[in-house]
Image (tube, rainbow, N blue to C red):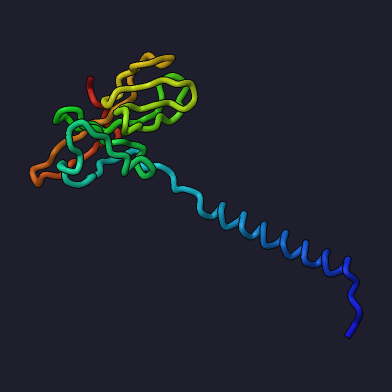
Length: 144
């Protein structure tokens, strides 16, 4: 058996650690989120899953929408802040959306309550179907 210096052992261990780290970075890249689906009509389940006074972000990562219901009218809100386009976060305790970039706030139905944003969050139309489920047309803007 050949004598191996301490330096050679450390260099080999360091190289192995670097390779493992790079392999881990590669696997993270492979786990990137799929692109949002922003067109077509989708069924988001029973309308009863979206009670009055609540917002449900279950479809934010898939369709880029939050289903909101103020008092029986369900809408799909695109929480893209109308100030500079950051994604506003739903704040359940305050029942509002908050933009993390510049502090704009929006009501449950997407109306601005604190600037700098002055325009409401965009919404798309929802329809309750005969079977009691909620259908969202991702391309049809909701008329305010």
